[in-house]
Every structure is written in structure tokens, then in C-alpha cells.
Length: 366
Ligand code: ATP
Image (cartoon, rainbow, N blue to C red; front, side, top):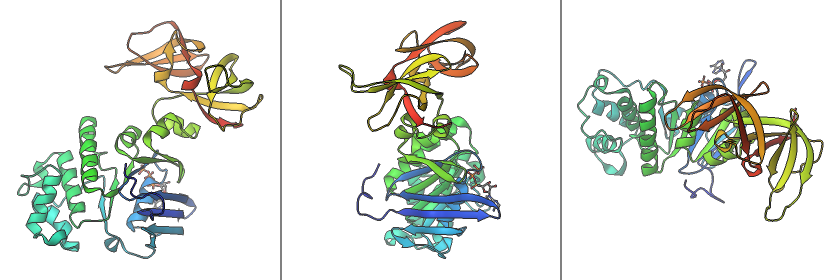
């Protein structure tokens, strides 16, 4: 990630208390966020959480009901999309079928002169090179694969040299394998240009793979904004913990708190979960007291067979063979637990985890 938009610099894009209402519905509900210069920033969340509306507000296709949107410190209120210097790519690539690939890309130059005093055709060639389709200028868009068409759509959006690239589910019409390949290419193109990018997807894996930072959205607002690793390892809420990747969420009452032990800097909350006593590491600065209700999570890769300080006995309910690992769902007293193993499991198994591999999500909730 780029640090060029660090302290002092105005963020490339800033939403400040932005709300968008459609009648009774707040599609976007008091959202405040900042996208740094050169950053790949992703809005991710389930259907209807307000991702597309947020992107449309940034693009200028919609105006907020309340709040301010600023680009590099300047309000864009009332500025129409064509004057915002943004390139936009949607899910349905919508190339013009009666034009060649080169003409499609060139169409993006109808709204701005080619940068650096280039000719139109030089600029088109440069862009097709960038999206790794150097010989496609004379081809018919319909002769290209879905992924190639989406790259042409990106080239068209980038043609005028926008300051900001907005991508709304650009890969959702493609099959899984193609999506994985295309996301690598999208990220490479973005890095090469250093262009600030806001990306919308409902696919959490894609969001983690492609982004500098991710905003996990729920009901019109971001629930957590952080780098992929943080969102994955230290989810700020149960919703984030369960939306991003597989997770095992536990909740119970704190029966003891152990302070610093010899050779271990971690405090431990001893939590009673359904009669079982589990030991959970508590980060510095987190207040926890006996009697608190504590919610925590353990990722499947940290739930190990016959290992770990806190152990549970559960029964294999189902297994999915995924190639490298098998994803096994266990039944633990009516609760589902997910583990990943290399060896097949059946019947009754003991799984465990160490305190430092548990992450506290909330205290005093429920
Ligand atoms: P999806 O992944 O399904 O596209 P999303 O996260 O992009 O969902 P939005 O499309 O932003 O969500 O919609 C957020 C909410 O606002 C939804 O409840 C939707 O029905 C509502 N909404 C969006 N656009 C309009 C509109 N033009 N008129 C009325 N309601 C709208």
C-alpha cells in the first residue's frame, strides 16, 4: 500500500457523514470514510448493504441526502459525473458491439484529450498494452472472453487519465477461475498507474486478495475499515468475524481473569461456554472482569485436532474435500464448529486452541 496520502495530505476521497435516503430506506447511513491517494480501497458486504449506492455517490450519479463528499479536500457537491475525473467500470461491461475494441477504448477519449500530448491511436495502443491485450485493437468485442471484455472496459475507463477509478463488481459475471486471474491483473494495472481505486464486491475473498484496505459494510454503514489482515485476524464485531472467511464464534461468561504469567505477556480470560471452560487471550488495553459476557472467535486454521490448551469434544457432522484441505463441520452440543484438516475425520474428535489464537470480539454484549 501507498503511504503517500499519510499525515497532513488530504485524502483522495472523503465521505463525511454521508447519508442517502430513498423514501424510508437509508441506503447509505451516515458514512464517514477516507480513501488515501493511490490506495486500493474496497467496499464489501452482503447484498443491499449500500455498496453500490456509496460508489454511485462518489461517481456523482447520485447526490447525498446529507453530508459531504470531498476529492482531495474539495467538495464535489453538484459536480456532474463527467466533471469529476473518475473512470467507472460496472458489472455488465457494456462495450459497444458495433465498434472495434480500439474504437471502444478510443470512445473513452471523447470526453478528454489524450494525456502527455499523445495521439488518440497512440493512447489506445498504450491502454491496450496496459490491460495486456496489445493486439486486440481491430477485434470485435464479442470475439473476446468475458475477462478480456472487462479489461477493455477498464482501458476505456482509464483512457482520459482519471484521478479515480471506480469498479462495481467488475468480475461478478465471470467464472471463479477467471475471476481469480482477472483480480491479479486488475491489481497489477492499478499498481502500475498508482491510481486511487474504490472497488465494490460482495465476495469477501476477493476483497481480502485485492485491497490495501477494506470497508466491511452492513445496513448502510461500514462496520470495520482496516487492512485485509486486520479484518481477518482482528474482526471488530461478530458480523465481520462471520462475514469474512470461515470462523468459529463463541460466547460465554467470564469466570476468571489471569494476569501476566511467567513467560507470557497475555492476560487470559477464562470463559464458561455452555459448561465448558475455555481460555482466551485478551489484548492489552481491553477491559475484562469476572461476570462479563464475552464473545470471541477462533479461525478454523487455529482449531487443531488433539492440540491446544482449551479442548472440546465434538462430532463430525459433514466434510467437504477442497483439495489441499478438507473443511469439516463439527457438531458441538448443537453448535457448528468448522475446522480444516488434511486427514479425514469421523465420529468423535477432540479439537483445541491456544489462548493467543482466540480473538475477543466484544465484551458485555448480548
Ligand atoms: P448489491 O450487492 O445487491 O448490489 P448493495 O450493497 O450494492 O447491494 P445498494 O444497491 O447500494 O446495495 O442498495 C442499498 C439499499 O438501498 C437496498 O435496500 C436497496 O433496495 C436500496 N436502494 C438502492 N437504490 C435504490 C433506488 N434507486 N430506489 C430505492 N431504493 C434503492
